[in-house]
Length: 603
Image 1 (cartoon, helix red, strand yellow):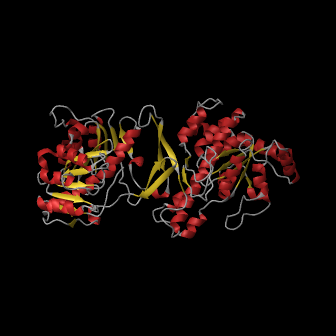
Image 2: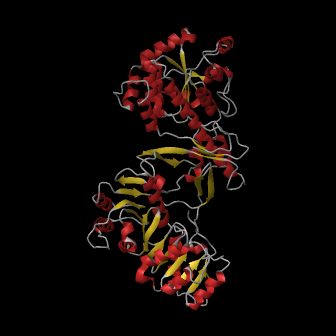
């Protein structure tokens, strides 16, 4: 979890530093948490599946549970107590049956108690413990010394135990709680009124979870039904494994932290505050451990963002992988770049990416033609790259992807790391799977607009709006004497849309909705221009050129070289103190010059 804090926000990081530090807290998935327990210091036999292990407890429950409850009634001090309060009651009856078999007296609240009673499981209602009825429409149920005293009391502190005895408070050895479905409520299709959102903020639940997690040396805490089998096995072994207890406590605090981050994010959006709040938290959940990072000596992992703003937001993080090797660190970066670029286009389009730069882009009614033209733009770079489409991949296109030979020699079958598209026909997917065992085939949803873009720097993070502008949202102002033909203007818009995805300094040359060449990542714009011209070759005559930023010089520099090469129209932001030189140069060579007023730096 990433937490971004303003100076007045005090947060303790793993290193002990306080705000304004920024840190990442890791949320393991349920399966990975289970794996960590299997590798822990304690050992148990796992001979039954999850449902089977839970069912075995139910089969013995009737007699033994009755005997256990009778014994606990006779000797309260000797009984073990479990406090259960759940919104999500998945596997509750099976789990509770297992606890009763192990001698636990179950104390529960409202709906959870009713569910247990319906399942025929003995339960003590929390109001019997507190001697106080539930009140304020359920807002106050467990906030009582008879509950929290039994959770927080340290068993190794004599005065704690004496206080419990003085006030006739029993200890709890286990707390099982999950929270009101706040996230689900506020992300529902029809939205939620403000008052309903407020009523779905859990108070008692987080308080019990935090209390039990703090006192985890004496009280086990569980917030996830996936951990029920592990817990029952642990209790059955009657062992005291503090590592197991600490991991459950960590998971509990993480659960509450993620919950609170959703509440905080939602509440901020209900205010009239700035888009950039004084502090905010980004909840991250581990999706997969990666073989390595950008390089083999770097360890790495991939996390998904559980922020409310990312709900149904699309993107590569939520893509479905239909086939191929596991994704690598660089695969995610390249696939993200390709997908973000291809989704910019409305017409059927193919984008080929290498090292996060689009080396080929083409739009055509026929997606097969678009694919071939995109590869043709730079077949050397396309080999081993990522291919992205903004329309469904059918049988014919899949067959062409599988069999297409490199334009450089007409013989070498093109190889790709990833194919990504919004969907595949059944036959298309079958054919692509036959291309290579390693080819990663991804199905992704389009990224929603208006997202916050975050980027890490040493000791901090940069936040900005995503660069979502389209050609339809800006003006291409004519500043030269020569006006572009309609086809030239369309080419300029196409090149402008491409150049925003190329690393700065960036130049793109395009014609007829097809990228002919691009130059990227050079410290000066002249070198980027020369690379783009070399790739475009003879096709540069009459083509459009787009630059991600203004030209600082014109004469005997990039603008004049572009004009001499035969470029028909140039689109650039303008804003240089030498804009007049660029205009005069284009007028001399009878080239159209368009100022967009929008820069597209990409670092």
